[in-house]
Length: 205
Length: 348
Image 1 (cartoon, each protein chain N blue to C red):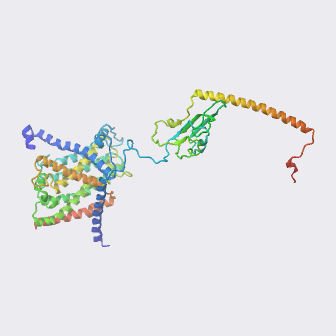
Image 2: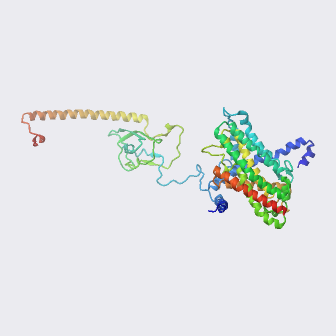
Image 3: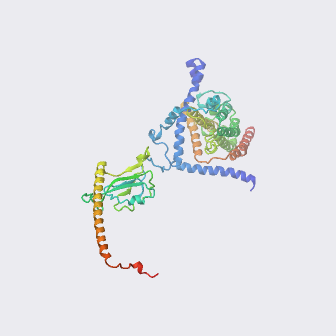
């Protein structure tokens, strides 16, 4: 291109584009701001937003399925078996509760908000809430303990479970002894007859 | 005002000191306002709202900022040239403040009504460059020095087209005193320099396009002289950080900012006086008088400050070579041509 034409063309284009830009910014000076005043005004979250986890302990049956589903292992559950005379009640879905849950900790600092723990829950007691403002100065405060059991309750539950287990074990021992005795008697009885060949021995080479 | 104060105090020394106070007060108040304005305009141009919490719509934010800067620890780098480091911001600011002395704030107030006003302002504002170089050098930091050198290179090269633009107006008006320049433009919008001043009608028609070009040349180069965004080459966050004032903090940093914003008003005020009538009312004899004249001066000045902010949030920044191209290959020849044209027009 002719350098003179180019020179003046550049100047013309410079001024023209600057005025176009100025017109645009001036228009935006009077358009409504798209931002909101965050802590006082909050945006509506989508219906299925995944934020802080919440566990409704009344419904928890201690099945440990959420802990197993968690890809980052941030859920920590301990359970104690209940004795037959304990009545832990039923969940809102009608399921009978059979386990005490003395420990249900979620380390929300580790949580990746994938929501995978929510789907396997048979009683729908673990769920994602819409709370997202829970920063803490101390990281340990981010470990949420949902268990509602007091230390005394845990103590009694553990002793009871132990006792029951011991009883069961004792029963097992006696039962085992009984079966053993029965087996021995049977063996003694069989010893008098020639042993029958087993299936494996019958197979051809 | 000077005569009045002299009659009041008798002693000229007191008068001189008192005459220096109003511009300083004006600079401080104006800086607070323009800090707020800049952030608000910037935010609204980007569809945001800026400060909303300190006071009504964040009106107290500049005060909060100022208080914060005053409380900040004033650090001096161990390897810095201490004396130069300390005086650099004050040199920069006094260069700007000294230039305010010759600004006609109204028909009856001008700090110093010297007959070479505009020449004095052009000369004294060069002190700003000295201050910036001083700051960059004394910081003993290569990036600060680079920033200062870029700044100096920019200001020095843009002083040439702006001086030519000023020369064109001075030729037409026949005076260098800013007070007289403003007085010459009273009597309505048609007497403003941008519309050919008080030239006879036939000459005016030729002078108007030349004046508009001169105004554009002056405005663009003045924008470069105050180192603001299309021309903020000295600041480069990724390479030079803040340029010459990287090592500064607290009060000294605040002084640099004050100088920058005062400089912004200074160039806007000069553009006003040279091309848009200074304190002269646009409606002939309507709305005249000392207070109205001060009002017109400040309003027009602020309008150009707003224009500057507007451009800052519109245009992207230039590259260093584009900057030099613009100064030497576009603005300087155009200013030359216009001055030549006006000269021929005047002798014709």
